[in-house]
Length: 85
Ligand SMILES: [Zn+2]
Image 1 (cartoon, rainbow, N blue to C red):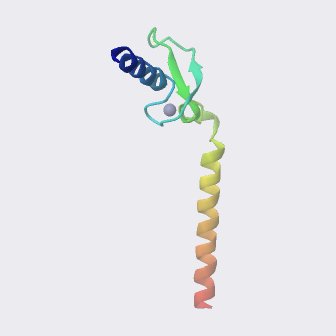
Image 2 (image 1 turned 135 degrees about the vertical axis):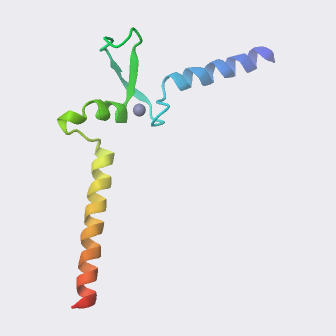
């Protein structure tokens, strides 16, 4: 009984190790730059994008969102124009 419980806790801890606590996404990369400290940093998709932000990178998910927002804005403008014309 106790063994089962500790196994479950262990499994939960294992799962947490592979999930980014900031973005709740699975880690997909490792930051090998350990110059700031000796600890290896794991990066999820969004962490990776944050790190590469200087290169104007965004995730497909983020791109979709911003495209949706833009077309939504366009739509609103069209609706507004139709309303007042
Ligand atoms: Zn992250």
